[in-house]
Image 1 (cartoon, helix red, strand yellow):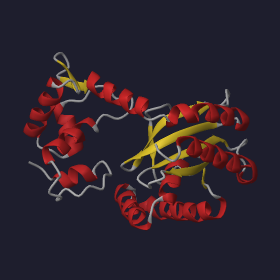
Image 2 (image 1 turned 90 degrees about the vertical axis):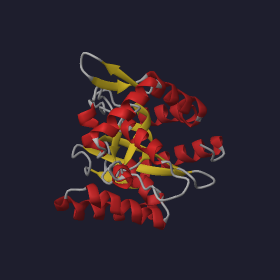
Image 3 (image 1 turned 45 degrees about the horizontal axis):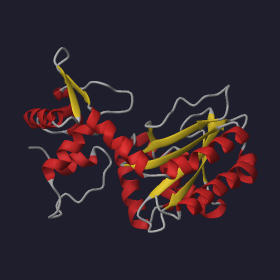
Image 4 (image 1 turned 180 degrees about the vertical axis):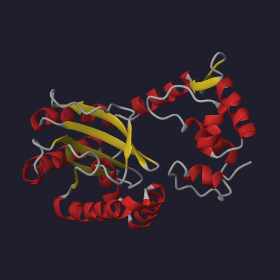
Length: 272
Protein backbone atom coordinates (compact mmCIF):
# COMPACT_ATOMS: atom_id res chain seq x y z
CA UNK A 1 0.00 0.00 0.00
CA UNK A 2 3.02 2.32 0.18
CA UNK A 3 4.62 4.06 3.15
CA UNK A 4 2.31 6.68 4.66
CA UNK A 5 5.23 8.25 6.49
CA UNK A 6 7.10 8.69 3.20
CA UNK A 7 3.95 10.08 1.59
CA UNK A 8 3.68 12.75 4.30
CA UNK A 9 7.40 13.55 4.19
CA UNK A 10 7.16 14.28 0.47
CA UNK A 11 4.98 17.25 1.39
CA UNK A 12 7.25 18.37 4.23
CA UNK A 13 4.74 17.39 6.90
CA UNK A 14 5.89 16.38 10.36
CA UNK A 15 3.27 13.78 11.22
CA UNK A 16 3.25 10.99 13.80
CA UNK A 17 1.76 8.29 11.61
CA UNK A 18 2.10 5.72 14.40
CA UNK A 19 -0.25 7.60 16.72
CA UNK A 20 -3.30 5.44 17.56
CA UNK A 21 -5.64 8.28 16.52
CA UNK A 22 -4.02 8.67 13.08
CA UNK A 23 -6.26 7.53 10.17
CA UNK A 24 -4.02 6.36 7.33
CA UNK A 25 -6.73 6.22 4.64
CA UNK A 26 -7.77 9.80 5.34
CA UNK A 27 -4.14 10.97 5.24
CA UNK A 28 -3.67 9.33 1.85
CA UNK A 29 -6.75 11.08 0.51
CA UNK A 30 -5.47 14.48 1.60
CA UNK A 31 -2.02 13.72 0.20
CA UNK A 32 -3.71 13.44 -3.20
CA UNK A 33 -5.33 16.86 -2.84
CA UNK A 34 -1.95 18.33 -1.91
CA UNK A 35 -0.51 17.15 -5.22
CA UNK A 36 -2.17 20.03 -7.05
CA UNK A 37 0.24 22.96 -7.05
CA UNK A 38 -0.92 26.53 -7.57
CA UNK A 39 -1.82 27.14 -11.23
CA UNK A 40 -1.89 23.43 -12.05
CA UNK A 41 -5.26 22.14 -13.29
CA UNK A 42 -5.20 18.46 -14.33
CA UNK A 43 -3.33 15.44 -13.01
CA UNK A 44 -3.74 11.79 -13.95
CA UNK A 45 -3.55 8.82 -11.62
CA UNK A 46 -0.03 8.13 -12.88
CA UNK A 47 1.05 11.71 -12.00
CA UNK A 48 -0.53 11.46 -8.57
CA UNK A 49 1.04 8.07 -7.86
CA UNK A 50 4.47 9.48 -8.73
CA UNK A 51 4.01 12.49 -6.44
CA UNK A 52 2.58 10.65 -3.46
CA UNK A 53 4.50 7.39 -3.69
CA UNK A 54 1.18 5.52 -3.44
CA UNK A 55 0.51 2.47 -5.65
CA UNK A 56 -1.58 3.31 -8.69
CA UNK A 57 -4.50 0.99 -7.70
CA UNK A 58 -4.71 2.79 -4.36
CA UNK A 59 -4.63 6.14 -6.12
CA UNK A 60 -7.43 5.02 -8.46
CA UNK A 61 -9.70 4.11 -5.56
CA UNK A 62 -8.97 7.32 -3.71
CA UNK A 63 -9.42 9.62 -6.72
CA UNK A 64 -12.74 7.90 -7.51
CA UNK A 65 -13.89 8.44 -3.92
CA UNK A 66 -12.74 12.08 -3.84
CA UNK A 67 -14.46 12.83 -7.15
CA UNK A 68 -17.66 11.18 -5.88
CA UNK A 69 -17.56 13.52 -2.88
CA UNK A 70 -16.91 16.61 -5.00
CA UNK A 71 -13.30 17.22 -3.92
CA UNK A 72 -12.01 16.22 -7.35
CA UNK A 73 -13.55 16.67 -10.79
CA UNK A 74 -12.95 14.05 -13.49
CA UNK A 75 -12.46 14.85 -17.18
CA UNK A 76 -13.38 11.80 -19.31
CA UNK A 77 -11.73 13.28 -22.42
CA UNK A 78 -8.42 13.86 -20.64
CA UNK A 79 -8.77 10.93 -18.24
CA UNK A 80 -7.42 13.23 -15.55
CA UNK A 81 -8.60 14.95 -12.40
CA UNK A 82 -8.87 18.58 -11.31
CA UNK A 83 -9.68 20.00 -7.90
CA UNK A 84 -13.43 20.05 -7.32
CA UNK A 85 -15.85 22.59 -5.93
CA UNK A 86 -15.66 20.97 -2.50
CA UNK A 87 -12.09 22.23 -2.11
CA UNK A 88 -13.17 25.76 -3.05
CA UNK A 89 -15.93 25.62 -0.45
CA UNK A 90 -13.39 24.63 2.21
CA UNK A 91 -11.06 27.42 1.13
CA UNK A 92 -13.81 30.03 1.37
CA UNK A 93 -14.90 28.68 4.73
CA UNK A 94 -11.31 29.00 5.97
CA UNK A 95 -10.98 32.60 4.75
CA UNK A 96 -14.39 33.66 6.09
CA UNK A 97 -13.76 31.97 9.41
CA UNK A 98 -10.43 33.72 9.86
CA UNK A 99 -10.77 37.50 10.05
CA UNK A 100 -7.05 38.19 10.15
CA UNK A 101 -6.90 38.87 6.40
CA UNK A 102 -9.70 41.43 6.52
CA UNK A 103 -7.99 43.16 9.44
CA UNK A 104 -4.55 43.08 7.85
CA UNK A 105 -5.45 44.03 4.26
CA UNK A 106 -5.88 47.83 4.62
CA UNK A 107 -2.74 48.07 6.75
CA UNK A 108 -0.81 46.02 4.21
CA UNK A 109 -2.02 48.24 1.35
CA UNK A 110 -0.90 51.35 3.20
CA UNK A 111 2.55 49.92 3.88
CA UNK A 112 2.89 48.62 0.30
CA UNK A 113 2.22 52.10 -1.06
CA UNK A 114 4.63 53.72 1.41
CA UNK A 115 7.46 51.27 0.73
CA UNK A 116 6.75 50.86 -3.01
CA UNK A 117 6.96 47.12 -2.49
CA UNK A 118 4.82 44.01 -2.14
CA UNK A 119 3.52 43.29 1.36
CA UNK A 120 2.37 39.73 1.96
CA UNK A 121 0.76 37.59 4.65
CA UNK A 122 1.43 33.86 4.66
CA UNK A 123 0.82 30.70 6.66
CA UNK A 124 3.12 27.65 6.75
CA UNK A 125 2.01 24.48 5.00
CA UNK A 126 4.65 21.80 5.35
CA UNK A 127 7.88 23.22 3.98
CA UNK A 128 6.16 25.95 1.97
CA UNK A 129 4.52 29.23 2.88
CA UNK A 130 1.05 29.72 1.38
CA UNK A 131 0.13 33.35 0.68
CA UNK A 132 -3.14 34.51 2.20
CA UNK A 133 -2.90 38.08 0.88
CA UNK A 134 -0.63 40.11 -1.39
CA UNK A 135 -0.71 43.91 -1.69
CA UNK A 136 1.35 45.36 -4.53
CA UNK A 137 2.72 48.87 -4.05
CA UNK A 138 5.13 49.28 -6.97
CA UNK A 139 3.38 49.65 -10.36
CA UNK A 140 6.72 49.28 -12.13
CA UNK A 141 7.74 46.05 -10.36
CA UNK A 142 4.87 43.63 -9.74
CA UNK A 143 5.71 40.46 -7.87
CA UNK A 144 4.17 37.56 -9.81
CA UNK A 145 2.51 36.16 -6.71
CA UNK A 146 -1.05 36.21 -5.42
CA UNK A 147 -3.17 34.63 -2.71
CA UNK A 148 -2.81 30.86 -2.93
CA UNK A 149 0.77 30.91 -4.24
CA UNK A 150 3.34 28.82 -2.39
CA UNK A 151 6.91 29.96 -1.76
CA UNK A 152 9.97 28.27 -0.30
CA UNK A 153 10.75 28.17 3.38
CA UNK A 154 14.53 28.39 3.59
CA UNK A 155 15.33 31.27 1.23
CA UNK A 156 12.33 33.60 1.56
CA UNK A 157 11.74 36.24 4.21
CA UNK A 158 8.32 34.70 4.94
CA UNK A 159 9.72 31.23 5.51
CA UNK A 160 12.65 32.49 7.54
CA UNK A 161 10.31 34.56 9.72
CA UNK A 162 8.29 31.44 10.50
CA UNK A 163 11.44 29.46 11.26
CA UNK A 164 12.88 32.27 13.38
CA UNK A 165 9.88 32.18 15.72
CA UNK A 166 9.61 28.37 15.88
CA UNK A 167 10.45 26.73 19.21
CA UNK A 168 13.77 24.81 19.24
CA UNK A 169 12.26 21.33 18.76
CA UNK A 170 10.14 22.41 15.78
CA UNK A 171 13.00 24.44 14.35
CA UNK A 172 15.40 21.48 14.33
CA UNK A 173 12.76 19.24 12.78
CA UNK A 174 11.98 21.80 10.08
CA UNK A 175 15.68 22.34 9.42
CA UNK A 176 16.10 18.61 8.81
CA UNK A 177 13.14 18.62 6.40
CA UNK A 178 14.56 21.55 4.46
CA UNK A 179 17.93 19.84 4.22
CA UNK A 180 16.23 16.69 2.95
CA UNK A 181 14.67 18.53 0.00
CA UNK A 182 17.56 20.94 -0.66
CA UNK A 183 20.19 20.37 -3.33
CA UNK A 184 23.33 19.24 -1.46
CA UNK A 185 25.49 21.89 -3.11
CA UNK A 186 23.18 24.65 -1.87
CA UNK A 187 22.54 23.42 1.65
CA UNK A 188 25.46 25.18 3.34
CA UNK A 189 24.29 28.57 2.04
CA UNK A 190 20.62 27.89 2.80
CA UNK A 191 21.39 26.74 6.35
CA UNK A 192 23.59 29.78 7.00
CA UNK A 193 20.78 32.07 5.84
CA UNK A 194 18.25 30.39 8.13
CA UNK A 195 20.53 30.55 11.17
CA UNK A 196 21.38 34.18 10.43
CA UNK A 197 17.65 34.93 10.22
CA UNK A 198 17.11 33.67 13.77
CA UNK A 199 19.94 35.90 14.96
CA UNK A 200 18.59 38.91 13.05
CA UNK A 201 15.12 38.31 14.46
CA UNK A 202 16.52 38.45 17.99
CA UNK A 203 18.49 41.61 17.18
CA UNK A 204 16.05 43.60 15.03
CA UNK A 205 12.65 41.95 15.50
CA UNK A 206 12.59 40.90 11.83
CA UNK A 207 14.74 38.89 9.43
CA UNK A 208 16.11 39.35 5.92
CA UNK A 209 16.26 37.70 2.53
CA UNK A 210 18.64 39.90 0.55
CA UNK A 211 18.59 38.39 -2.91
CA UNK A 212 18.59 34.82 -1.58
CA UNK A 213 15.25 33.85 -3.13
CA UNK A 214 15.40 36.22 -6.10
CA UNK A 215 18.61 38.14 -6.90
CA UNK A 216 16.57 41.21 -7.88
CA UNK A 217 14.57 41.31 -4.65
CA UNK A 218 15.39 42.36 -1.10
CA UNK A 219 12.85 41.47 1.60
CA UNK A 220 12.22 41.45 5.32
CA UNK A 221 9.90 39.17 7.25
CA UNK A 222 8.30 39.23 10.66
CA UNK A 223 6.39 36.39 12.38
CA UNK A 224 3.09 36.69 14.22
CA UNK A 225 2.72 34.04 16.92
CA UNK A 226 -0.77 33.21 18.20
CA UNK A 227 -1.50 33.93 21.84
CA UNK A 228 -1.70 30.21 22.60
CA UNK A 229 1.45 29.62 20.47
CA UNK A 230 -0.42 27.08 18.36
CA UNK A 231 0.15 28.93 15.09
CA UNK A 232 2.66 31.20 13.40
CA UNK A 233 1.81 33.48 10.50
CA UNK A 234 4.31 35.75 8.77
CA UNK A 235 4.30 39.15 7.08
CA UNK A 236 6.89 40.36 4.62
CA UNK A 237 7.84 43.46 2.69
CA UNK A 238 9.50 42.61 -0.62
CA UNK A 239 10.71 44.84 -3.45
CA UNK A 240 13.40 45.99 -5.85
CA UNK A 241 16.99 46.09 -4.65
CA UNK A 242 17.19 49.73 -5.74
CA UNK A 243 14.33 50.60 -3.36
CA UNK A 244 14.95 48.16 -0.51
CA UNK A 245 18.43 49.05 0.73
CA UNK A 246 19.57 47.27 3.90
CA UNK A 247 19.84 50.57 5.74
CA UNK A 248 16.28 51.52 4.80
CA UNK A 249 15.01 48.07 5.78
CA UNK A 250 16.64 48.29 9.20
CA UNK A 251 15.69 51.85 10.11
CA UNK A 252 12.41 52.45 8.29
CA UNK A 253 10.60 49.60 6.56
CA UNK A 254 11.43 46.97 9.18
CA UNK A 255 10.05 48.89 12.18
CA UNK A 256 6.93 49.76 10.18
CA UNK A 257 6.38 46.07 9.32
CA UNK A 258 6.74 45.19 13.00
CA UNK A 259 4.21 47.90 13.88
CA UNK A 260 1.80 46.46 11.29
CA UNK A 261 2.19 42.99 12.84
CA UNK A 262 1.60 44.40 16.32
CA UNK A 263 -1.56 46.21 15.22
CA UNK A 264 -2.99 43.09 13.59
CA UNK A 265 -2.10 41.02 16.65
CA UNK A 266 -3.80 43.50 18.99
CA UNK A 267 -6.95 43.71 16.84
CA UNK A 268 -7.25 39.92 16.70
CA UNK A 269 -6.30 39.56 20.38
CA UNK A 270 -3.75 37.01 19.21
CA UNK A 271 -6.43 34.61 17.97
CA UNK A 272 -6.10 33.71 14.30
